[in-house]
Structures are given as C-alpha cells and as structure tokens.
Image 1 (cartoon, rainbow, N blue to C red):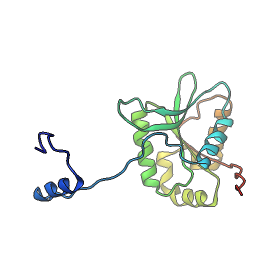
Image 2 (image 1 turned 180 degrees about the vertical axis):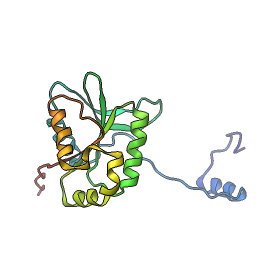
Image 3 (image 1 turned 30 degrees about the horizontal axis):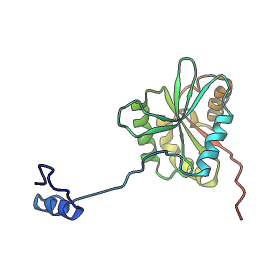
Image 4 (image 1 turned 120 degrees about the vertical axis):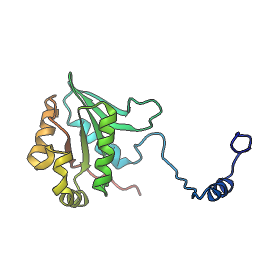
Length: 178
C-alpha cells in the first residue's frame, strides 16, 4: 500500500520501513520564501545599493534561472554587458561552506561574478583574516583592501567591477527600541 501511494505514511512508519531495509531515516527543514530575514541584512543591502551608479540596473531577490530552484541572489547589479550576483552575509562563520555555496550559485546563476557584501565588524575582520590564505582563489579582487575599494569605485562609476569581490561596508547601527 505504501509503494502504491494508497497509505499516508507517518514518520514512524517511514523509519520502520527504512530499518527493515538497513537504512536510517533523516529529515530536515529547509527555509523557503525570502532569504532576507533580518534588519541588519536589509541595512547592508541598502548600503551597498547606495554606492552603485544610477546608470546600473539593480534588482533584489533574483531567482536563479532554473525551474523549481528556490535559490535567489540577494541582489543583482547589471551593466550593459555584465551581471553580478550580490550576496549579503551579516555574520559569516564557515568560509568553505560560504564559498562553496557561492561558487554553485555563480555556476548556476548565469552571472559574470559574485560580490559578497559583509558588514565592517570585528567578527568579520577576524573571519577574513582567518580566511586570507585561501580567499584569493575564490575572490581575487579583495586580496588587498585597496583592490576591494577599487571594485566598489568601479561600481560607483557604472563600470564592471572586474571579478568576484568582497565588499566590506560600514553600516550605522540601528537605535535600540525601548
């Protein structure tokens, strides 16, 4: 009945069937909908957008061009002949997971490159310092802070940033609510 979909299975039943087959049931929840989940994310996204030339096209929540794929770019900045996916990370923790996820999105997203936008905080500076020995292979533009500023300066002029880049932006803190 289960194989013919004539039985609505419970988690317990699925675990028992798996056990008979020598398998262990694993279940996870995955977020759906908008990846913008907090105010810090929105402020960082707005701070990046404010640095862009008005001649550039700016979009937010841009889905990847694959049917049924729920992944989205936080932002997309486009010139006449190029497009870059923009990812906002307010509290990065795992360089390998982050760059792996961004490499897959770049591959599947049809973009020339990725701009990773991070807040200027002590934690982010420590994170980037720890990742520095391997960061250059994924993000050649931020190898030095001057080059990251160059990418932002190019975007401010409406030009192609020249490759994957990390933009570390200072964002004013939001006043606390009483």
